[in-house]
Amino acid sequence: MTTLTQQPWFDAYPQEIPVSISYEEKPLHYYLQRAAETFPEKTAFHFMGKEMNYKQVYDEALKLANQLRGLGVEPGDRVAIMLANSPQAVISYYGALLAGAVVVQTNPLYVEREIEHQLNDSQAKVMICLDLVYPRVAKVKEQTSLTHIIVTGIKDYLPFPKNMIYPFIQKKNTGIKVEISYSDTLLSFTKLIEEGRAAEIPLTINPKEDLALLQYTGGTTGPAKGVMLTHYNLTVNTQQCEEWMYKLKPGEEIVLAALPFFHVYGMTTVMNLSVRMGFNMIIMPKFDPKSILKAIEKHKATLYPGAPTMYIGLLNHPDLKKHDLSSIKACISGSAPLPVEVQSRFEAATGGQLVEGYGLTETSPVAIANLIWGRRKQGSIGIPWPDTEVKVLSAETGEEAGPEEVGELMIKGPQVMKGYWNQPEATAACFRDDWFLTGDMGYMDEEGFFYIVDRKKDMIIAGGFNIYPREVEEVLYEHEAVQEVCVIGVPDVYRGETVKAFIVKKEGMDVTEEELDQHCREYLASFKTPKYYEFREELPKTMVGKILRRVLVEEEREKQSGGKS
Image (cartoon, rainbow, N blue to C red; front, side, top):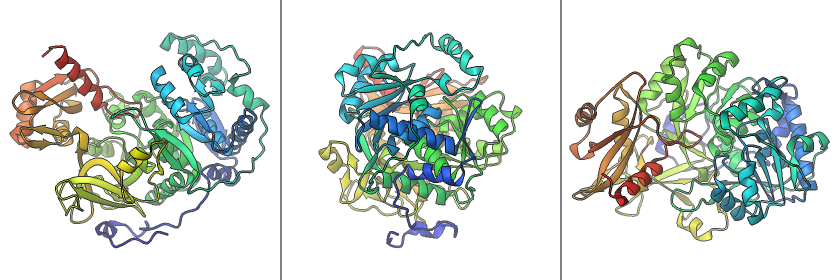
């Protein structure tokens, strides 16, 4: 257990949650082995009609691990995984760990340039990918260190007759007909599993030092960096999650798994937590509001970690009131700010609790969250998790800021990354002693609750005034006609920058720029009120549902350079 100095947020902790935890120093894959022993017949997941129990998942992961070793994968080698949420994603992740490899999660939406950078930076030896993305991987293979590519398809783990029908649906939806000519270096996932041995591989793992994962950041300020997360980082954060959600019962909960497993948030709060606690995951290959509503009602899902746009999508779906969502107990929202209005509407629709959490890839990812069952404050990201220390660095003095003073959040805790892969200078730049500099601007109140005002780099400086997009977005979300909003700074000849808001209107509702301007002026100082509004059918997003502010910023820059208004 960590020795912590008294902090103001300790008083908010309910008696069920310790401020410090005694952590198990085990490799991450140990929890799949334990689940297979403790809950062998318990359903590990349901996937479009296919179910597997924990014993079956563990056996298949072992088979894959032995096959990877046969392909020359040694402890510490990197194995890239480019899969949508599916049984294969779970089996591949734990199979690579059971072989002693380091997982490199790769977004299936990546284009060739991004794939090539990630594979070359990580020096991955093997990639496991979907058949749909294989053509992109094949184009860059010769420029990388890959020795083998293992290919699988969604149909491979579907029950009959869905497995026969799915390829036709896939071709209709994507226009892609997948044909693979297998060879000594291009292998079939299902054949490897069929021919594999479910034998345990002796490994010597130092959880605090050995890497389990290279998770690449979004690359918003340059090429994506590989975040080095150890087995200990990830097991600690999963154990912290278990303590925070203390009412959840091992072996009993049903988790709606719509967050992508290739994103660290879905990996920890959905996949790793479920495996640790023997939960049943309802695996969704992509976010589709109608399918999610049906799945919650059909499977009586009790836990649904998500992103704000996912909850917004459900709340604004015309079929919302046709479905019984009362099974939902708890939801932690992450990856983007949770509008207060969305929180209250979702809780009213489900009867469950929805709270905002905060973290980064570099913190495995969760560091701060509101209490699910206990005191919380609207608009706050909550209080630090057990053994996690947070303080605010004053931009003016370079020292710790006082209560209510805005500065950069700094985090110290056992879930903080080891550093950036092969980038010692970037690692040194983001640490101040043992404290990780988040790049997020926020403050702490007198009682130890934290608030994010915005990303340091997203702050708009207009006429000498600091404007935080999140504050403006919160006000716009309160308008009844606004479904989604993103605020950015655009060049202004007089003020340097000024505020522009991109708006997606709710279906069947209308609103004018003048009406939004009047609404904003009622709740914001005039210098914070948007000067420009642009209405869109949709906003650019990541697969986690996080609005891509940088894409809108880049679009505006192109307009400016092109002489457009």
